[in-house]
Image (cartoon, one colour):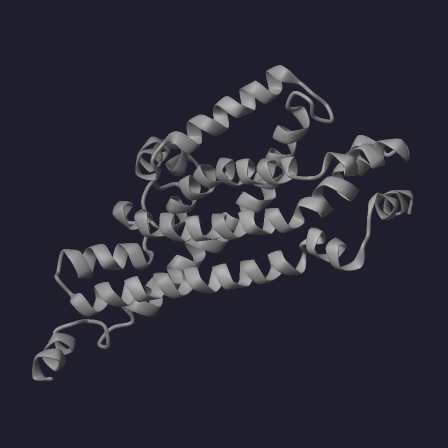
Length: 246
């Protein structure tokens, strides 16, 4: 017991506000990039789906070009991407270090990740739904907004859940470049200063945040699962046609 007390007494865990500050920085590193990732990643995913061969508006050169950019960005380890984007971060925010600067690679590195998840969700939409929309004379925009996205919303929410948890992990890596947050705290005090309580506190907090994001995401994914509702209510393509004609 005395050893445990001494272990805590030697830590900065209860003597400074380092942990609350790091929590606030982590939430900034997650939610600010997440906003821009959703804003840009979902349209990019839709564009990848629509322009693919067999899509609503096949454009081979555009789809191939976007695919190469997405694949190259996704293939880079986050730490390498951070280093590669240092000049861009300095150009946009005036510095390559700090919490705000770390948001630049976090955003750019996660947009292609979400785009592929959205594209995958759209591919899972029953082709019969799209055919029914075409039969009633729906435009491409109507098919996208009234058929594809509503039918794929559950999968997209699941993708958003995966994305925000990935951002949480990336935000911890941002500590390597002085980006602040729990990762930076774990490196500076937990690893370099051998502050065990701080190190394990950051681990526990990251686990708690990840679990919260997962539980909330799973809840909304289930609530918006049209397949489950159709199996319960018996809705079919006739209901799809009625919705498009509304």
